[in-house]
Image 1: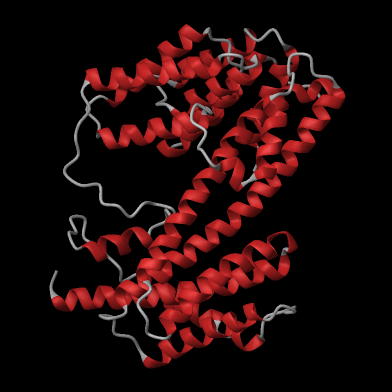
Image 2 (image 1 turned 90 degrees about the horizontal axis):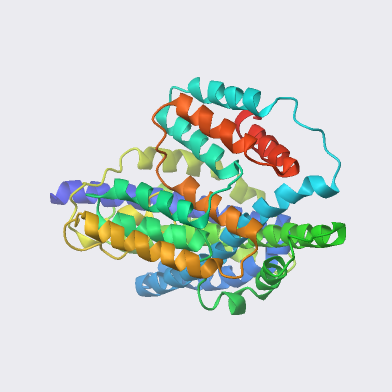
Length: 424
């Protein structure tokens, strides 16, 4: 990259990262003031971040420390996300038991009418992405009545559509499938999040086959509290990761960036002011002089972002890192993939698929049937949709509903699917 173009890119990245960091840092402080549940966690994170920010403002090189802290936060988020995967499965089960204990209005349509209504809704979509998302919602919510061998056959058949694709991409998909299906539960999560582990154990050990009202209400209460706690922790980690990403960009770009003195002074005024606010234990609100600068920061961020264009074949290590740090994937790894993409042949895909199904079979041992069906549903919804037409999809919906002899579960599936596809 030419020196002039590189300086222009570094300058735009610096302006964008600094303005966004200032805005997000201000928001981080607001989150602490507005949510007592987040306050302690935010203060703990801010003390770590603030020390590195002080180093940046003082001209020190703390990039390696930012990198280490970012990696730790990514690992903690992986542990946290594993609970979200588990809770999604148990929510699926409890949603289908709810009508046994809570009086609810029955669906007005017959299974045939409902299937036609679903397909009519999907047929109206002209966007391929929206259509695919709708079909995945259908598969995820419909009753599952496959034998395990039939299910494994479907999984292996759908995975063969990836023959010829990049091995790394398929490995990534299999990782998501394994974690979302509770095949792989990461070590250390119970120690990191004991309250979330406690709720998971209650849900894991519940007797769903013979569940009474008290058992249902206890599981629902535990799940709702755990999901709320998970979301609180996830919100803090996401905001913290955004701050670390932008601070990392600042360390990488500051030596080459050219920036207006007025802008640089404003950035430093805001972040230094917010930093001082965090140091005040009894703080109740943010100084208005900082709030007045937010609109200018938003304008600078937008104008700088428009000028940032990374090359697809970029080989410069710092620029490649900056592209990842400024992407929409806050937790994306910074390690280089290395080498050219390696296509997967049939033998490799079939072996990976076989291993996944064998591990699923082992995880199903002793698992309640209702939970097993929830896992199957979640796995199939993440695999390629192989319906050749919407008419074939309509047949699939109709037969799935008609084959479900548990009318309570069938009504719950229809209600949940209607909420996803027809409610704004």
